[in-house]
Image (cartoon, rainbow over all chains, first blue to last red; front, side, top):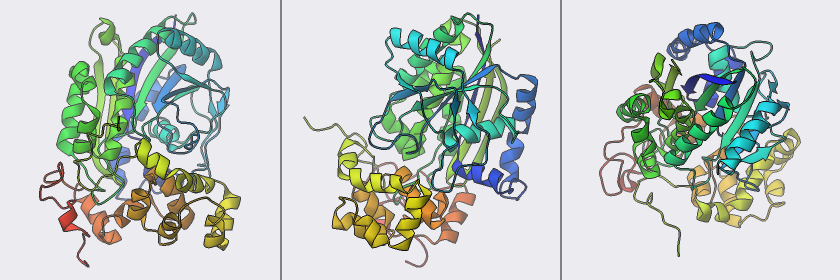
Length: 284
Length: 142
């Protein structure tokens, strides 16, 4: 049977992608950030999964205001890097895993979570920047990826509780797949940032780190944080953190297993406008 | 029953909810069109003519021409859509976000390098933080 081996959490700031694409990773501004991901790359090299289930949000790229799915699962064989206005990022095409994606869609929908099935979708920096941070800039990504897009652009976005419970359903779905695949689940976006209005530039290091503590040790409490607290304390775009709860909800301890092992934790301010958080948790 | 909006007491912040989305539908869809290289070229060649192809209000068109992102947001724009205008202009997210504060690009960059804007005084309208209405616009030149 398939198994969730680990969960990975990271911010997905577009400027990080630009720094990689423009060869600026050794600039003094960026050195501390990329240094924080060195242990993660080594870990990834040593713990290569068969599939990554990657939770992210589309930033008005694949989904305009014509359609706004709350939860969209990418079931295609491949996904092209999107032109977000700067031209497409020079990164590999993302290979999907249509069979596992279809299995998860069937299981999760029958478990009362109404996913939108997407068979054609370009993927933006929300998905490709985390892949770069963990995998570097290879010719091809190391394994197939199932993109899972969450609406955090137009309010109302799903609650943290809803995301957490969805993670539990995704775990059940993956662990009932009858091939012995090692699957990682990634939650991306956040941490504190606000990109708009006179309050732009808000960073709340203390809140971010307290939330990280909760996510690791008391995910139920993290799941109970209401929307308005994210907005007030971590900025209007800090709400992206609800996506981390999908990955956290899919870990063994939430279903009665042992607590996860913390492999790596990193926090850095700033990347452009954003507080960057990163975490790797392994199932024991 | 009107939408419940528990987020309206946060200073300097507009939540892109269904009301804002309805107001800004065509503005945001115009922005979306700039994801295509051909459209970016046509927009750059004659901004006014390109905007006139969209059923936007005159105020929305003027806000785009002025690159007044705070005004765009007040008129229903969403930052992820408005970012397509910035991309067309060759501006980064940091430059766009900074432009909404009144600070110069350098001042905003310095603030971020210093750990970002503090949340103190900026949680609720009526406190005295730098994002409050009575402290706008920010920046040394203002």
